[in-house]
Every structure is written in structure tokens, then in C-alpha cells.
Figure 1: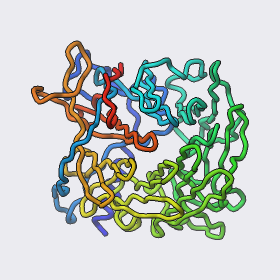
Figure 2 (figure 1 turned 90 degrees about the vertical axis):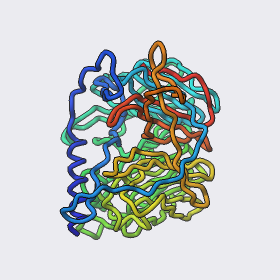
Figure 3 (figure 1 turned 180 degrees about the vertical axis):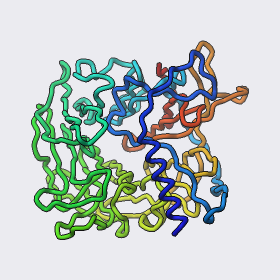
Figure 4 (figure 1 turned 90 degrees about the horizontal axis):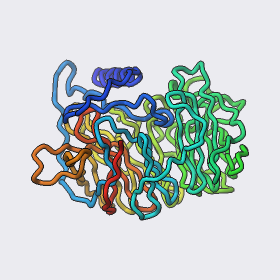
Length: 458
């Protein structure tokens, strides 16, 4: 019990640190390998509330004892990961990397690049041109199936007292037009593609408290925005007791992650982890994944990814959920054909799943360990359960500026750590990485099996 309390206090300390806002330092004129990444004070994105964070401290093996946690070594595997974009300096920034149907959109500071289908990533015009927003005032998110794209704009507020005024804009050949009002006072939980439009997902879940269910209104609100900017109900139905905190869609299949409400209870809900999933004109089928999972601030960090043929549910970044997230705290759930199949990424150490992506029959996860000094790593898990660590290419300084993939002759290469995984269905794997700096570094994007001249991020 004491160990668990220590872990919980450690996690709360991390959350407090992450909640503190800092003004970014000025970028050094010639940052060296130990320089930290510089936050962009005028960034237009994150582009909604960020899920980025720092790993918390490791739990002690015994109360009052100081121990170093070491995770079991994994065999090293190779993979054809190619550098497709890289920062020019430690001050470079990836604003977003979005999978928009057949198109991938990489947005950086003063640069945008696009990959259509299996084609290369190529710099192109900023598709946000003409959108009414103010850097530093608004946050943006983009969704849709190319060429039909939508932007969710919200004010960057510091408290729940002030409404972020979420507003959707629709992209047309001649620019952007504002959709009808959403009638929401808080930032929605998800913004996902649906047919020719998008679905905005909101619910009674407040991310800073345990869930309660008010029987006077639905647990989850789904708003559909069509290409003409009209707002209405989508062509799916959902059990009104379902309370969602995350959602994903490939445009044809919608998955919601959450819990089930119970209007008769006055206490916070502890009804387990559920996923609701279905296609157009369906009543979304609700499937119980983890009956003992207690919905609350920690569990809200869990995510769902939808690829059409299958959905994947990944656990939150936490070391204090071992009693509720079963079979192990690193279990990833595969959801298909109305059934759930749990797959434990690993067990027996203080490591967690930071991100996951399913590519054909292979699961890729980002493994992050507390207190061991071990860098985040990309782990490939085959259908038979074999686990291998996939090494990302390293970087070296490029003559004339910027960076390139390091070779054996480079004396001071920069290690790259995976940060986010993306899949353009069915099997196009993209990896956001950070290289050369602990807690901040050179942004880079790797893509599996697509060699090209890397796009430079200013």
C-alpha cells in the first residue's frame, strides 16, 4: 500500500509540473548537442490540448529504499525506417503530423509538406491560408478525408471559467468558411472524420474529475458537420448512458472509448472500460474491455485508434493502474468483429506504453521506462508474441546546416527517440521522433520503406 501511495504521489507531482507554463528561452545562435528544444511562442497548434508529457519517477522497490529499476533487454531488430523530415536546428518544431485519408500533412514552423498515397513527402502551400486565427490566441486541429478538410479552432484558455469557443471551419476551393455554431462551451474530447464531414465528440466527462452521469442529458454528444457547414446529428446512434473521453474514425467506422453511466448512482462511476464501435446507420455496439478499470484522471489518458478493419485501445502512461488495467498495465486491446483480444506488450517491469500503432499483423509500441535511465524505444511485436526493439536511425550535422542520417564514420551522432506513431491505413507507418537532447531536441520524422530527400523544418 505504501509503495502504491508513493507511486501515486510521484504521478501527481509530474502532473503538477506539466501543468506549469513557462516562457520559452531564446534560441542560442549555434545550439550544440546538449541544447534543449525551444517552444514556439506563436505556435498555432498542438493544436488542441496536448497529450505530451514527461515520464515520472520510478517507484521504489521497498519503502524508503533507493533502487535502480532495470527492464529486461529486448533483442535488437532492424527495419527500413527512412528519414523524411528533419529540423534545421534545436529550435525547429513539428506542429502536427496528420493522417487525412490518402494524404499525410506535416505542418512545421513556416513550412508545410504533403504526401499523397505512397508518394514522397513534398513541401507545398499552407492550406490554412485565409483561415481566421491568431497565433498565440487560438489552437487548431484538423480532420477529414482529403480533399474534404475541416479545422476546429478554439481559444487557448487557462481555466474552465472561460469558454474556448470551439468553432469549425470548412475548406473549399476558394478558402475557408465558418460552419454553423456547435453550441458547446468547452473543448470537445475528439474531432474525427466521418464520410464527407466530421464528427465533434463531447460528453459529460470532465477530464479533471471522476465521471458522473446526469440522466437529464445523453452521456455523450455527437455533432456532425457536413461540407456545407451545417451541424446536426450523425447517422449513428449511441446508448445514452455511454460516457466517452476519446474517439477515432477512419471515415467509415467510428470508435468511442469510455465507460457506462448509471443515473441511479450518486457516487463517481466505476463501471469499467468500454468501447463503442460501428459504421453508418448502426447503433454502435458497446463492448466491455476491462471490468475493473476505474474511470478517472489516469484512465482518461487511454486512447483508441481506428483503422476500419480493426480498432486498437492503448493504456494511459501510468505505473499506478496495475490493479485495474488487466491482464497487465501494458495491455493493448485489439477490437474487431464485436470481440476484444488483449495483448500484453510486456510485464514485470516499470515500463509503460507511450504510443502504439498496428501495421498489418504487427503491433509497434513506444516503450518508456521509469527511473531506469533507459531511453524510449520502439518495440515491434509479431503475431506470435515475439518482441524486438527497433533502432531508429541516428542523426549527424549536415555540411551547410541542418542534419542528415548518421553513418559509421560520424564521431558524435545524435540518438533519436520515438515520440508518436501514426499509420496511414493499411500499412504506412510514420514516426515522430526527437533527436540529440533529453527533454528537447531536433524534431525528425521517419517513414517505413519510403526513402527520399528529407524535408527541412525551419
